[in-house]
Length: 330
Image (cartoon, rainbow, N blue to C red; front, side):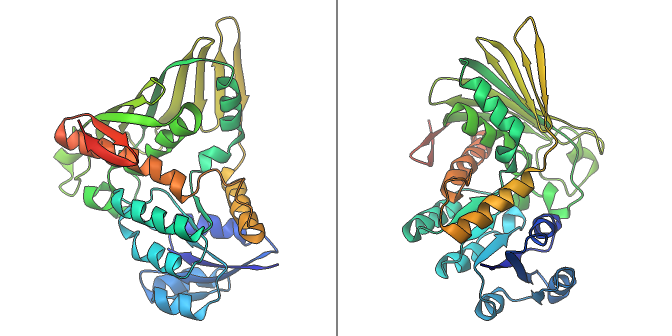
């Protein structure tokens, strides 16, 4: 069985997924939709596919078995609606949007149609993440801290708050997802964001360049996450740390460290989670079995609602509760 795939988006993430899928005999990369015909044609040429500058034309012409939505936060909306209306399974890169209301509506429609979806929280597919989960099942968590300290990606829309949703929505959301994946659901959020450096030098920077967020989980655990994008290129510090009754468990993208006081254990992991992520989605489309998908649209909505709550908290200065997937201010 050959799966015909269409891509929405012509950027780096579309290329990342397309490069992986192009090595599979059971996948045919059929088409690319871009913001211009020129961009679509340029991307499509690399995979002997067809480029489209019009989404409806692409979906009317191509018989797609599944689609990949790899677009910036502000570009979500009409693409997903078209796919849902046509009952086309889709993989979508995070974040789901720069807010949470529209994704909530999509999640309801997807559930009604029992549509297969997968969301690009690729860290869930890493072996070191599973190693961390295995450790945590044997320990009692007291507190969690997380950090996403980096510079600014070389993308024009990223520093525009209205377009990207800010760093917490665009990058730190990965840690929020890992928090949910390993420790439980979030009950409330309190956030403080500020622009300390970038706004002084760059007139087109409207995002906060530093932030601190306190997340209270339903099980009572407290987590503190911080992020900044003021660092120079190629300098970063990304990770999440669990303080437990057995010691300190620290996760970074390429390793997990376990400090139990007497012995420091380190587990290195340099696998490519994107390969597993893609394999899982394609197999789900082929078989109809979604049990191996680590985050579908409904699950990812919960992560999206937390980042939206953090932005609301930063604006209002109040704690925002997350109840029944809706944000409510205390």
